[in-house]
Image (cartoon, rainbow, N blue to C red; front, top):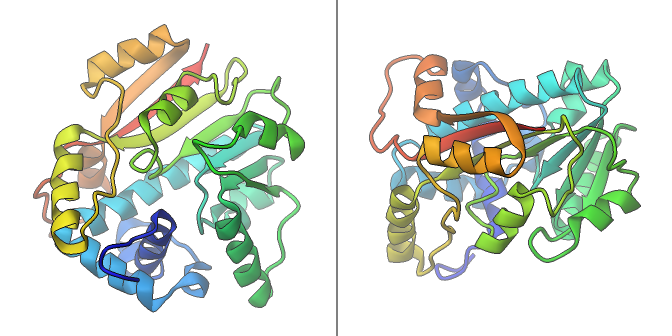
Length: 276
């Protein structure tokens, strides 16, 4: 990978480098038994670069992984349909007991190349695609997600759980507004949405550091209000209820044992909401 070019999908390799480290995963109380299959030297290098650029990169990504893992496990017992936007090399629906023992169907949405590589790596290691996982090749922000989901068996009239973990930093403003406003997915009542975002200060700070080393500004700004009360009000106006806006910093302090470094831990938020 050249210094001036960092494809967005390569960031999945960096997260894999974290999840493949059993000692780190044990510290946060999480696991990913398939992560090592996807580990690359490029991914290791990206994780090291990201950790140098962002003091909370390692801790916060692992804590976020646990938070969303618990969300998925809970959703598997509540919903018959789960949409994972920007699924990348996430294999939780493949190995978590909540999915093996439940009846939820998981629709993994990502660009065709990522999903194809994911299937190839799994099959090369003797892991077949579970019946409850459906791959939905789609370029979020360009393709019509609703149509792609329908084509793969998604039932729009049934409530579902939608997860966008680590996705909104790479999407344009229009795509995010469309997803959050529900016009892109047309979610049924009682559906749930969970996502995370960065505030402008964090986004700008990290973009400046990446630009200095790699010559690109990789991250997009979150286009909705960023203060918790303001964002909550907007989401309620859009038809959501039970809206929670939580700082990832507060979750990290609960999940990650000392010693730790909370330098620049502000500005990373978790959001959950239910469609009225």
